[in-house]
Image 1 (cartoon, rainbow, N blue to C red):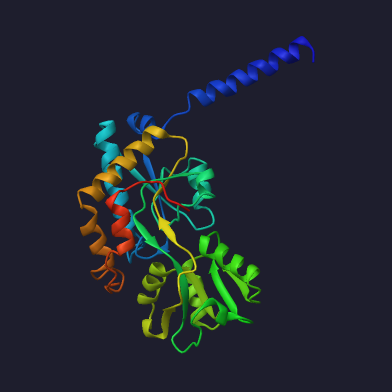
Image 2: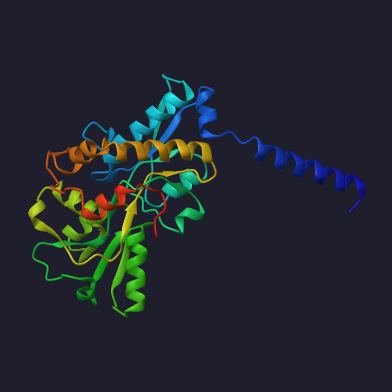
Length: 296
């Protein structure tokens, strides 16, 4: 390598390193007048979904409003604007990883694979994957789907768990992907699939808001254990500490409980149907010592 090329290479590297060293954090951007970008989902009832007025609502959205208030207080920007970005199960991780969203407020599982790319705060719900089937179906567990068709949503942990179980247990189940939860339910209703595997709380919420909820039922044992948490950028420790501290405050002060009750025990939009799901013993125990560390 000649001297001029070496000098050019060193200058380029220095510019890159300088850019990395001065990368703007979320709090710095907001303090400078920038917006906080909250990613939300279209049909993850009751965590994050669109109401009749096309406004993002839900349990996770309410929690994210509390987190947004904490950002306002920390930065002194009482007029901080919030921008909403709809994401899908397939692109939600990339949107946070690429810096296009600061918080992903939905029903995303915190697991080791995802922690390689993004960060998570303290879980706001613990659930597990089960099966949604037609009310007249004889399917009670994944083994009953041998020779049948199972649908799940693209980019989700239940889809991966079902594929692994199918492969390891030689179940001979045909597994297909749906672009979103709503489409997967429609496929079960239309007999295009025999079951939909997803977090059971989402299945209850989705079924409750169909035109004929009695035509569907949730069955089977947990195929997975899913600690759901709000997702945030991986390498922004100051922002993560603020989010963790606020989540911990909401839990320890029990301020989170009325928010939980609003979405899981009381009637919710769009049909004002209650899910009737009190806080589980598993979640209560986890909240005794709230942490972002999960053993999965």
